[in-house]
Length: 152
Image (cartoon, rainbow, N blue to C red; front, side, top):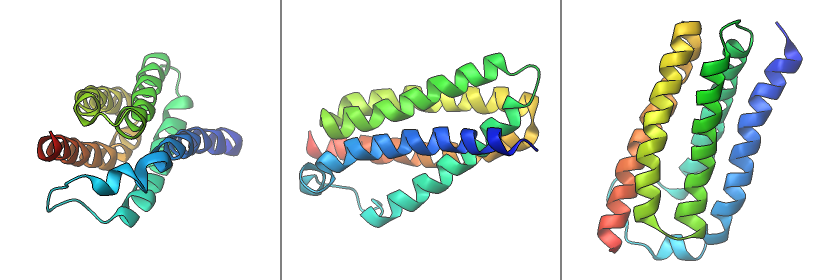
């Protein structure tokens, strides 16, 4: 096991989450509480721990793929989905545009699915590590659309 690559893989994902969280914090105490939300909206305190766990799992998956020979395409998809993950926070919380954020999160979900497929071809464990991420972003997509719908 290459511990440096392992730490870098997890660090990359957590760093993206941390910076995205900084964008989130600009509106989470002001604009976001004023929105109407669906009955299934989780309490605000849930998001931080869930995303932290997901970013760690994403980093673990990245590490498993990084050590393979045929990693270039898989890692390219990973980087694209990570960039889209980051962009969503900006669209939703900085631009305060739930519709644009919803359109983007659908693209993000497709990219995560493609990433998981490429990861699974290299390492079944890496592919499986992305399943909770897929499920959470699927839920987040429904939540995002509901927030848009309730506040249009």
